[in-house]
Length: 101
Image 1 (cartoon, rainbow, N blue to C red):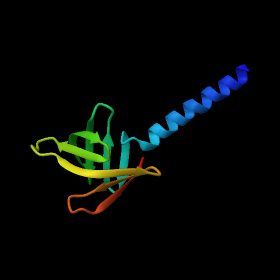
Image 2: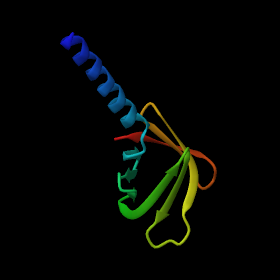
Image 3: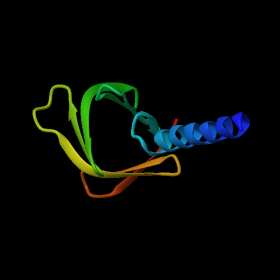
């Protein structure tokens, strides 16, 4: 009985951890020479061709709002995460796909 309970607990733990990592925006995402890093404390950074920009972000449902340091207006867009790929609509309405690093 103890072995069965341990097995159930392990399966539940791995299920929760696996789903959390795959479906959360937290982490590092890359697209060529462009890398977003989203931290748990809602801070972020964007490395564009070696130029690092600091930012903060907010997520609600599938909406992403990023406020880059020095700007007064946030970049607001939609996003999806699937198979370790983050898809963000750019400012032209085109999808840009970032891979989890």
